[in-house]
Image (cartoon, rainbow, N blue to C red):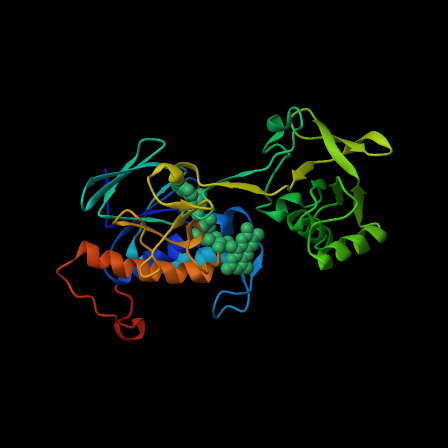
Length: 336
Ligand SMILES: Cc1cc2nc3c(=O)[nH]c(=O)nc-3n(C[C@H](O)[C@H](O)[C@H](O)COP(=O)(O)OP(=O)(O)OC[C@H]3O[C@@H](n4cnc5c(N)ncnc54)[C@H](O)[C@@H]3O)c2cc1C
């Protein structure tokens, strides 16, 4: 049994910053995440994208933000259970929760903070026979490390921002040796500027733009070698490629969180904005996973919510102690 002061479910940016704010109050945190690495959406979906609205960082890569948050949390020695989804919360006493993961790991604490973001998210996969056999052997649903595609032929499918942005990035940075973008319509859903950039690159012969078409087949020995593309008018043809990257977005699902007796509205947990507590005393919800009037799903809002929630958690854990706000400039950071 892992024992701590606050169990945080979700090691996204909000969960990570909450370790620091809890640490300032001498509260120890243990984080659980179903993903194998910390960082939530920032690490999993867009580690190489710059973020422009983190206060005092005119621009910072999402992956760098996660590295910095880990460094900032380090003095408070957080514990991590990674690669395991939290599936159960049991309130065994007024001040004692037990959170159990899918692998049976048990965690005990007087307070639980749910920082589960979009929940457990799954990529939308096109219905192509045998596609699963090529996952991680040339088929990827998320681009984590663009360098992987250095000198490779890539077929990207999709019509949204993700497909457009990556087609542009892999072409403009001279990473992939060949980029094909396949989309089933002739118009795109993405940002107008990105659509224009793709059109310009296609006109210069740098992106092989195939519209009104779909990838319908895939083959290769151990790795992807070819995809079959079905064009509305021209019929089916084969295209040689090293990678097939369908970017049709992610399907967010609250997953097990929906079954914990919490008030849920539009796939998110309802909270009281005075301290981001849920309908179950002792359980808080912070970051993308919560909802309230005026909610914005932004990292900086999640940072605020975590900061306020730990103040309330302190009062629950130490009802006899008075907490006086102290500036870090005055007190410094006293780690554990
Ligand atoms: C492409 C893209 C660009 C973005 N750009 C910006 C931007 O410029 N500025 C900005 O402020 N925001 C941006 N966002 C939004 C931002 O990423 C989110 O607001 C932020 O990630 C929310 O952080 P979080 O910690 O609440 O949740 P998340 O980052 O979603 O992390 C939640 C974590 O909880 C885990 N989890 C969920 N359920 C369980 C469970 N039952 N057990 C264990 N683990 C669980 C998940 O695996 C995940 O790791 C962007 C998002 C995307 C997709």
